[in-house]
Image 1 (spheres, rainbow, N blue to C red):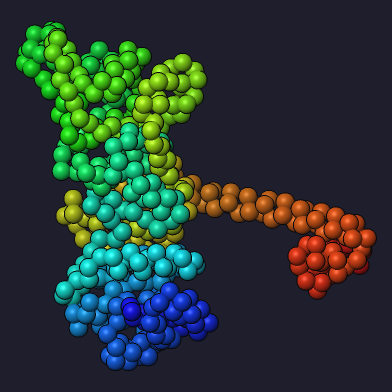
Image 2 (image 1 turned 180 degrees about the horizontal axis):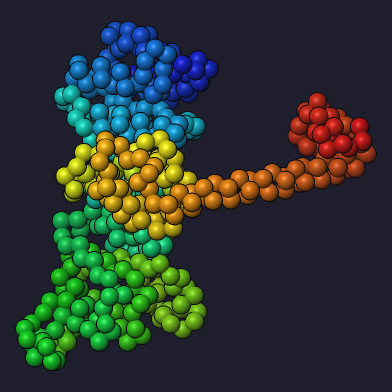
Length: 450
């Protein structure tokens, strides 16, 4: 029976987790501070340490360091709020197996525990790891949008279904396609990416299917096309909506026949590819407008994955900042440690219209410019600061509007309940599913007749 130590200074929260996990057949110990946790760790062989980062008289990092020094096989999961996700990343670099952001559901915790227990524990001291990445070097994230994306990738990757990836520019559609390839049975074969928007329509057939020497002016030697080159693996066609109608017909035929004919050749060459395509435009609308063949659209669209924008994955922002910072340091041979709190605050408020590509480019530029250990707000471009501040003001205004709408709706519901019950307060409260005292308080707030 797995043994878990839950460490948190919130006694009620600890007891709640203890009761839930014991119902799931775990043996659970509770500790409400570092010293108590260290004592339990000395007296028991633990499978999992589930600890908050901030604790009385210490931190969860101290407990993690204790495990590293002793070379224990205990898996560590850190609990953290959004504001401390960057600290959780630091914990993972020290050897934590995973982290979970508060507030979390008991089921989410159970899934995390089952996931880390399905992986064989290390036989020695924990080594530094990269945060939340898979085999394709992809930051997986913890936001709801990221979890849904990862679930869809894991679901479709083992199949041979054609996958259509939809997402705005800069959201990482090619990274998603590579993740599908890396998790498939074709992972040992080629992954070839082609930008359809960069191919002149006159050369598309040659790029896709290849050509034989002398088939047209400039064809000075035989060429292997991307279909043949990716046979046995995965072919990723980006911006597929940019293909001309003639090229769409050629692509459809190749997908239907699973064979290609090189330009200037009469020989059919069989190909075995898994096709993944992507676009940042609405192909359904293009089909409706007659700009894209409906039969090709359905052939490409056996399974659709929508890649969320960075704005939709705001909870993952600290992870990507850390990932791109490490990448920029390696490329530029620098050692920038991070961002000041003021600079990080601007990045969190900025809406990121260019998504991950914009974030990566910015961080690389800031790392190049930075002469200190941390990137200060002074290095961030003025237009980003202005946009971040205006974005916050807009959010506050929208929240105020939503609150006003909520109050109007609540007042109307109370009035309707009172009329329906002929001003019987007890019945009205029951109808509204609130207490009688709460009803009186809300009626007084809205100046309704008591």
